Image (cartoon, rainbow, N blue to C red; front, side):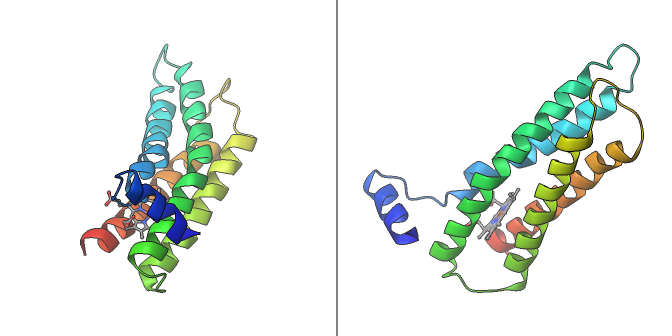
Length: 141
Ligand code: HEM
């Protein structure tokens, strides 16, 4: 399947890896989520908690195509070879999905509090940094 997808993309003139273009969705949404969450604790900006929560939802939806594209690039460019950074990325992608899902299910953005749920917003940023760092190490060494 990987072969068919990349052959098709080559035919229409797209010769780049797929994953880097999609990584901006979860990475950007996670950064937006924590920024808006923190901003919502400032006077008169409470409504921004909803914006942060919406970032979490879009980030969660973006994880699936991004991880799939990462898998395709790994098969195509790295020959599907198992190495520490790929295993780390797979583990972190699962952790990212779980934390985003926990926030999506349990958070009440109408009533933001500086509690365990806000801590999850920080955790998800740390996981995203790990994914970006390991991805950068893979790409640029
Ligand atoms: C959804 C969670 C993920 C995020 C947010 C993410 C993020 C990133 C980022 C920021 C890069 C650097 C891209 C660049 O050079 O601009 C990268 C590279 C890479 N990632 Fe991921 N990654 C995720 C999941 C995965 C998974 C599950 C795999 C493999 C199964 C994977 C495989 C790769 C590979 C092979 C590269 C090297 C560049 C390439 O050829 O695409 N990633 N990732």
